[in-house]
Length: 615
Image (cartoon, rainbow, N blue to C red):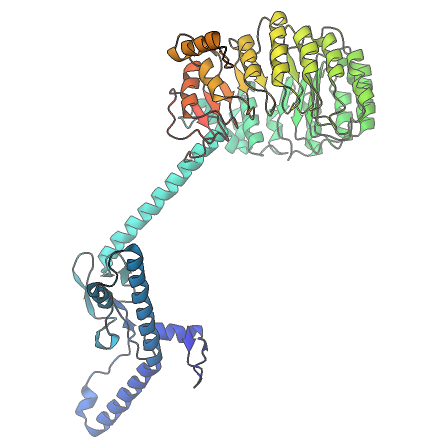
């Protein structure tokens, strides 16, 4: 947008009005011509009375009219014409250079003439005005041009009103289809995040969802059953809809078990209602309970006399002194205690818990408690726990790795291992192979659930050796194993785990165990009489090859398998895994960039995490 700036040719920016008038064909030359025509008409009117009877010419704006390979614009500004001619020359030169670069004879005179044919001289071209007739580019019917006439680029012309209405309807339908497809992709993505499929929900689930959406009026339904109430509670927690106005629905005097998984929007006064309305509670679980403070715990201490299980997550407003007071009063009744994510549960708090509830505890779970920073206090745990009584033990993500040592875990397992079924030591990165060999492999005959996330000091050889001994003690097998980011484990460790628990495993997580090789995976998935494995066995026996032979493994009960960030997993391995695990329903392959959409696997498996999945 340039305008003449003087004899020097220096130009500056045009105003918006000037540019608009120029685009509409109203230039200085246009205005001068109109002025001349007006003055001539005035002279003719004064000279002859007949001229006054002629209709007055109406000033109309020109319409840009595009014909085939032609753009016609009313523009008489000489300088603009020079700019346009220079642009045409540059365009012709650019096209000619492109043809030369592609080797298609850019110097041919015929091609130059083709470029020149794309342009016509504006002075020789006619233009149409609003009100003139034109031919519709769509239906070839004549119509009158108006300010609402629409130019269609694909048709290279204007279309009539009827065709314009049809085109608008098609565009609306296209936008609606795009929106519908976007909603469908969003629904599929949400289902994948929930590890489910998009399917027709049951009538009960539809009703429960509708109730959750209209939770304010749910009292009109009367008694809908405790199981359905629990489902509604989980839906509200997931949607962050559990608050002071909805919590009353779940409280009644006969309730003995209560679980709220998201109390972020529940105030302290509403949390007190739990003890007021449900005095017979035996089990209470409150997660994300950041508004629970000392007065609430003191009220629970007074009103919940039958409470046997207390599980809290995020109760960072409760002080260490209040914890000690609570344990001194109610600790002897507690059989299950779980506490996560608070820095105010101190060393003295743990000592008070062990002194007052240690003999009655059957489940102890402590996770991310930064106030526990004394190794000697942790060492008191095996001295207070009752012999052969604890079934669930979790000591995860301590304040520092030096707090949880091999010797501490071995001492605890020597006391609790006989009855222990669940063991969680996530984030205890100071542990080594020693606690496996001298602890789990010797003292845990009934262990079924094992979680060892982020134990990066466990070695492939040590883990394999421990499970070779473990099978002499534990004959039942493990049901759930989580080895996320045990980065030093490899083929031998996983093979010994499979040899011990392949017939019982239901959930298995090998996320980031990247030392697993594809050759190992193919061997455990292949029949032992397959020609390739028979050939491998002969090479090992006759040639003393360093290759290793792995027997075929079957996982008949495995339903959930996390193989994320294991680079050996590809499309071929996915096919074999589907055959290896007949009940597998969820397979996670995040970070396995060799797993593509071309992979073939058994119907019924939900594969989550492929990079090229279109969601």
